[in-house]
Amino acid sequence: MSEILVLVEHAEGEVKKVTLELLTLARTLGSPAAVWAGPGITAEAKARLAEYGADKIYVAGSADLVDHVVAPKAELLAQLVAAASPAAVLVAATAEGKEVAGRLAVKTDSGVITDAVGLGEGFVADQSIFGGGVNVRAKVRRGTPIVAVRPNSTAPVAAAGAGVEEEVTVALSDSARAARVVERVKQEKGARPELTEAAIVVSGGRGVGSAENFSVIEELADSLGAAVGASRAATDAGWYPHQFQVGQTGKTVSPQLYIAAGISGAIQHRAGMQTAKTIVAINKDPEAPIFELADYGVVGDLHQVVPQLTDEIKKRK
Ligand code: FAD
Image (cartoon, rainbow, N blue to C red):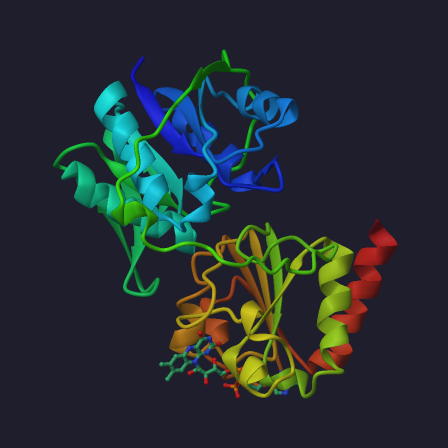
């Protein structure tokens, strides 16, 4: 079976969920080979990669791979593409993953598909384009298909792979070392999942009314084990930090469930969330455009609806 390279996303030694999703997807198309870039791979991380189907684990442990932003990762993958001739390369459609994908495509003279929400036989991808406004089927016709797949597009399912480890020494060019990371500021890791990776996202908009009122949104999110998002109106008003903004100029999320409370559904907001599997809207205006998109809608004041919903969810736990 032909090898499919999967670039591992990891933080503090832990493999991120999106990588398990990519391995699950790769298993349906060939033999998954995980590519770990940077030092610090642990026995647990290797076991996790094998548990989700990695037949091979390429370990490139050089610190250069994480100290110089994305360029070295693209060079590492290009080196592996040349050496192993994989059938395809999968990366997560995160900000970093998409940049790696683009650079790799140039280096290997290959086609690239970003924001895939599905991938099937022959590496035909379902791709969300034009800010999520249109879905198309796309296929790479040149070189090695490089596909950036959105988090939450596939449910991760364990199925053991051989997990054979192979050390890789990467020969980096000077240009790959041109930009160096000088400082890393650790984000406070709350109990909530990362916004772009979360299976459930609860977002609040201008209808929330104030920074204090966002506690209603947070309580619902916590009852569901969800991440919190916000519309630009809410982040611009200073009610919630900008890093949680969902939309064209914020983060793109593709969760199983997206709950939009007090959000009108402007095109720029939709661009960041309309590939969510199920959308629930809570809005006091029955004419709000978000209802055109929603699978389930509640017309009402979110300050009444959301706490009731939270109570009900807590009761059922
Ligand atoms: P509004 O449009 O004001 O809607 C508030 C909604 O809350 C209304 O539908 C109202 O009926 C409802 N409401 C009010 N009170 C209650 C209540 N008590 N209970 C229930 N419902 C209530 N926006 C983004 O979100 N993300 C982006 O990334 C983004 N990028 C942009 C980029 C550009 C270049 C531009 C021009 C705009 C961008 N915007 C973005 C802004 C976007 O156009 C909208 O202005 C924004 O999404 C509106 O946010 P909102 O839905 O929270 O507010």
